[in-house]
Image (cartoon, rainbow, N blue to C red; front, side):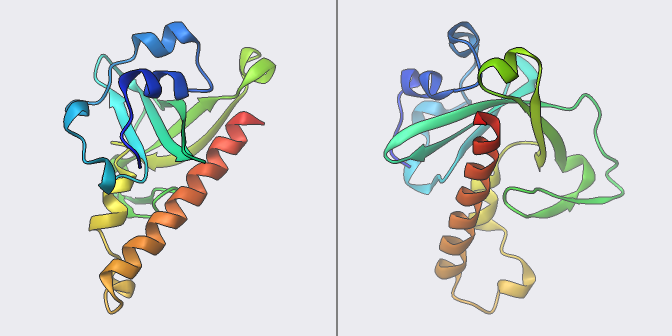
Length: 163
């Protein structure tokens, strides 16, 4: 991703008001992010722990959505998969996130949901957690492939929010 300013991040959010975007807390260490290592900027709002944000780059411009985590968590005794980065992990590390739809549908309370890593660190996971069945391949090739797949799935989720 290209480096983004605070203003660009706030203005990229398509499914929340300007007031909501202006009130969000940026991720800790925002000024020190290694943008070259990010395919997706995802974080939970430390001031409002159920809120989170996903921002990616589309045609050179940032595009983001606000998401809300479910009030309850899955059991840590079960395994769950993030549907964005497709990483299997303990159930309490994956959460159902919903995003208010854009426009009149969103104003009417319509949402779209999916299971995502609870910490929204999917971009990091596709680079560091190589599944066992892919470990015999070139790591750089695997990371590039997983990053592109992550991007496609996030774009699909964002498209559902924008419908």
